[in-house]
Length: 315
Image (cartoon, rainbow, N blue to C red; front, top):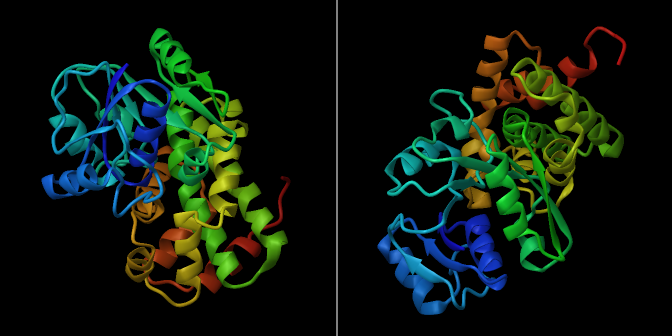
């Protein structure tokens, strides 16, 4: 395939190299001409995924629209603007995990004039770059396109499954980042693995309730996009959302946490959008609600007390 990867962050850079390594013709589209020039000169991204070699990958400052596939790996807050500005009508593969912060809608619904596929799952970029075994899921209402991309992307170390539940997969990808903020808070307060496991498990229950109310399938939440991605996001040492929650628990503001991490922390913008969506659907999300209160200046200890002191009930 001839592929344009729009977004030269960690995941976009890693995915571009992955595609090139497996025989595709790849152009990496950077945010600015200066960034594109720096990557082109060094054959590496000087800021993100610095250990990833980009030999054979073309670098550009603008998308041309003449490829077989356009891959979008940009922050959720700019996703809509980016996809609306893309030339051409080639199918779009979204690597972005979040909701549109302005409207609270799923990102795939912002894509017009072209079919869209969503890639999700427990896909830590540095492990994909290292060639470690990884599984992912492709979600699309276009089964033929999803199967074609499954064939093109599957390798000995990168196993791809197909799922037609776009709603469920996208909501999993957004909600798991919010739960990871809470789990990071537990890490920051030194509450132990019992508390961490409880937050992950009840967080998964929140995700499933919301997804089912929005039209997703329950089994999606026990799969790669749900349980799989949630576990790795909440447990991996370099998980940005988990790390942000840890820093906030230790006294940083959300802005300070994001600045120290130096990359986009999707959960910070997704949490209020997720809360708004849950309110529209009439779904109770106590962990998400608590995270939003902390991000608005509340005390993390109050969040934990609120969750632990809820009325006892059946699981």
